[in-house]
Image 1 (tube, rainbow, N blue to C red):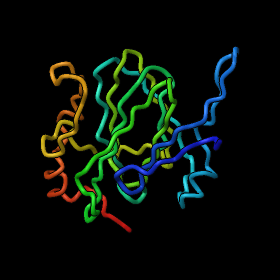
Image 2 (cartoon, rainbow, N blue to C red; image 1 turned 45 degrees about the vertical axis):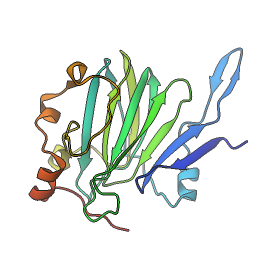
Image 3 (cartoon, rainbow, N blue to C red; image 1 turned 180 degrees about the horizontal axis):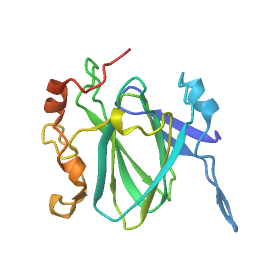
Image 4 (cartoon, helix red, strand yellow; image 1 turned 135 degrees about the horizontal axis):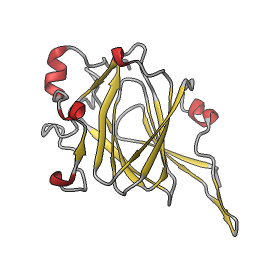
Amino acid sequence: MAAVEIRPLAIAGAFEITPRLWSDDRGTFLEWYRSDLLADLGVTFELRQANSSVSRRGVVRGIHFADVPPGQAKHVTVTHGSALDIVVDIRVGSPTFGRWDSVLLDTVDRRAIYLAEGLGHAFLALEDDTTVSYLVSGHYDPAHEHAVSPIDPALGIDLPIPAAELVISEKDAAAPTLAEALASGILPRWVP
């Protein structure tokens, strides 16, 4: 059995990564990141920074993205709790522009998700104290960071927590819709 199973998502450049879990009476071991397996998919991922966030149930973070270039690819997993991790194709000219896909990240299957540069990223914490850890290919630079509203009705992201219970930062709540971001020219372009 392979150490990791990788499945492409509906958005080009995004993959669900399910590691093999080795469990015994001591606990569980897994490989949650393997650069060689990404390289087999044609992905070059140079690690530049590692981030973690701890969120209560109902917190939505994102939809965030960085200018391309420099871009910021992400490899994301949950180390405590559970989250619905969401990738949104915001690349102008992409055949799946405006579509989204999601992966349940939790401490049961211990999946991860990889998102290429130019894709939008968000997650919804499904439990209190959910810890999301992500490796990124570029350093955080607020001058090159942007957001699209995670509650844009045109995107229609299906969040499994009622809207009245969602916790969204002022910055993310004030983010433009996808149509507004497109009109402003801040979205990255699709490069096949």
